[in-house]
Amino acid sequence: MFETRGRLFFLTFLASLLGVSAVVHARPYIHAVGSSAIYPFAIAVAETFHLKTRLPTPVIESTGTGGGIKIFCTGVGDHTSDIVLASRPMSKQERQYCAQQGVSDILEIALGFDGIVVATPDFKPPFSLSREKLYLALAEKINGQPNQNFYWSDITPDLPHQKIRLLGPSAASGTRETFTALIMGHHVPKLRHDGVYVEASDQETVIVQKLQLEPEALGIFSFSFLMLNSDKVTPLPIDEITPTFKTIISGEYPFSRLFYLYVKNDHIERIKGLGRFVEEFISSDAIGPEGYLVSYGFIPQREEKRRLEEEKMRILMRQKKAVL
Image (cartoon, rainbow, N blue to C red; front, side, top):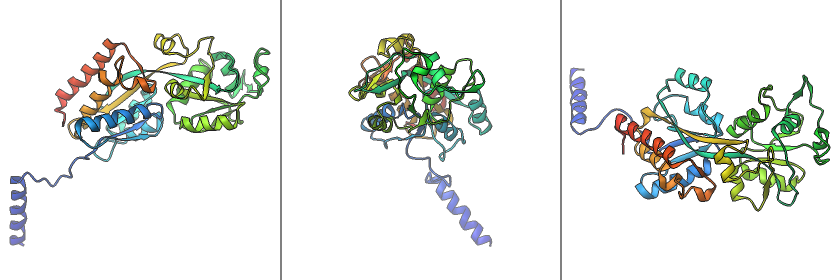
């Protein structure tokens, strides 16, 4: 028995001299989850990061904002994700849930702008909507009674005699959450479930395909997706404002929003390249006025705001001794 103990002690001592640890090595790749609207941008950044650093290409999962935050908040360590990409801010309740799971040290970074777009197939004439008309079309109840508006013309005679049917993302999507909050305002934020609003897919390409088969319907998209598919869908003005780069940046377009990135600060010092990946995402090369993501439909913030976000990340990397 003493001989066995002595051999184990010798092997442990030898391992320490050689720099070998009994602790499992950190995960060799970066893992991000979250918004399907931000997913195409994240893939482009991941590929650029790999080409620049020769580190493994980060794994990006399109889970929706709400689903991504739940995954992100499961804990700290190699078995958990490093980043969540969100098409809305993390709520107070979500931060509390994160903290309960030991995920309390989080850095929030505002990436840039986007807009939520209601669109019709390109071969159908567009018509103008408003937040109030969308509320009257989609709310489960109006004045406490089940919604009886089934045609747009039921809401107001100047709208087409066309069945109300919107194809959009699921409840796990940040786009769906933001859209619902924007049209409901002070009303109870509950969409009707009688076939008028259809959870078509969290993948916008699928919604486009379904619109081609169901041309009377409308679809809900991110502005960035619209920019890449303007030959297939046409946006409807909301409150008489058409979504454009200019109206979204100014906030004039009612369905403007910010994209966010959340990173686990404790992972900066354990996952190789994580800090550099976030730096690439918020660099001028990526999201500056002429950044490579702009060609994908990304709408940059003002340059001074982007620099502030960049400086936040640099401070974190110094504090946490980032693994480069």
